[in-house]
Amino acid sequence: MVKMRIRELCEMKGLPRRYLVDQLNIDSSTVDKWFTGENIPRADKLPRLAQLLGCTIDELFEKEA
Image (cartoon, rainbow, N blue to C red):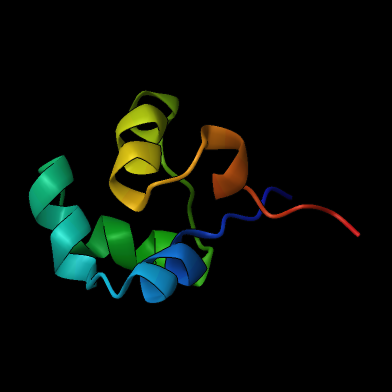
């Protein structure tokens, strides 16, 4: 299963969920699902998401131990 670091990266930057909702023009329930790991972003959202969070697309994904 793919795990994302979206919640962690938002918290590190001090960005509220609402920021992603507004910047990506998506529903808040979508971001909620990203934060809980219930769902992951579509591939077309990854470049903008990485830009907003100040990271690379690779850094959005949790590394496996």
